[in-house]
Length: 218
Image (tube, rainbow, N blue to C red; front, side):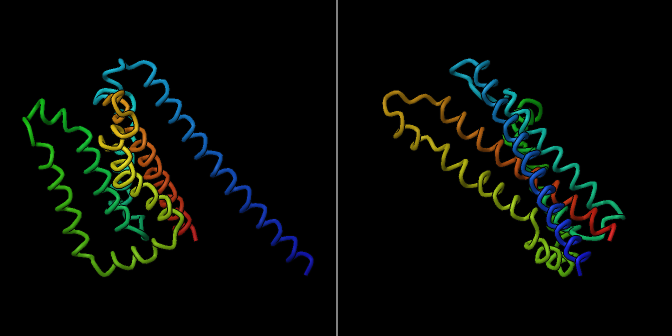
C-alpha cells in the first residue's frame, strides 16, 4: 500500500512539473513575440508601422507556414492513426490564412484579386476529403473536443477571427484617440493580436503532435 501511495505521489509531481514546464516554455515564447513587436515598432517609420513588409508580418507568415507544413505532414503520414482529420482541417485553415497573408505578392505577380484562387483549391481538397471520410472525421472531432490542443485552438481562433478584428476597428481607435487618431496605431493593435492568435494556433498543433505521438507509443 505504501509503494502505491509513493507511486501516486510521484505521478502527481511528474504531472505538476510537466505542466509547469509547458507554461514556462509557452510563456517564454509569448515574451519573445512581445519583444519582437516592441523592436519592430521601434524600427518602423511612424506612418508605416507594421506594414506588409514588417517583421511581425513575416513572423505571422512563418508561423502559419510551419502549422500548415506540420499538419500536412502528419495527415499524409501512414503512421498517423489518430486525429488525422484534425490535422487536415488545421492544414486547411493555416494554409488559407498563409496565402491570405501573401496577397500583396499575388497582386504584384498575377494581378489584383488572384490570391483567393489557390485558397479555393485547398479548401475544396479539404472539404472533399473530409466529406469522403465524414464518419471517421466526426469521431476525430468529438475526441478532439476533450484535448488540451482544442483549448489552445479555440482561444487562437477566437483571437484571430473575432477579437483582433473588433479590437482593430477604425471606429474604436477613432473613439479612443479622437482628433489625434493615427491609422498606424490601429494597424499595430490588430497585427499584434493576430500574431498572438497565431502563436496559440501553433501551440495547439504542438499539443496535438505530442498527443498523437503518445497514442502511437501506447
